[in-house]
Image 1: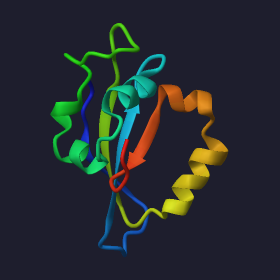
Image 2: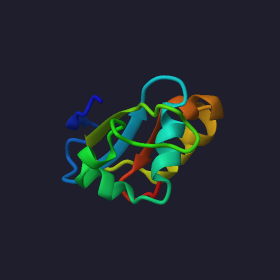
Image 3: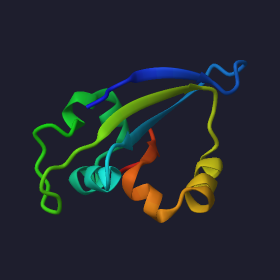
Image 4: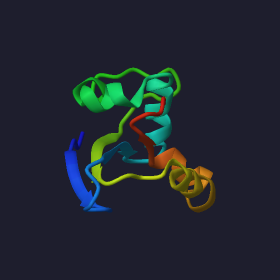
Length: 109
């Protein structure tokens, strides 16, 4: 598992706010495996305790050997939820989302 916590990317340096994400990637179906394993989990819980959500030691009903890389990303500034929705519905394809995906800190997996 690759775990990087709080990488900072400047979006609006004048803002005191931060936007945090959980980003899951890896091999084929990594994001889908993660979602199947932790569906219903609040993203803020993952951000606060990322070691509890690594792929090692997880069991999955749908996948023989679940594997994913989990990253917690911290962006300086506000990220508009409508923009994220636009990305997920227009730019990110459904097939791509099976392999890599991201969730805002106020979402639920």
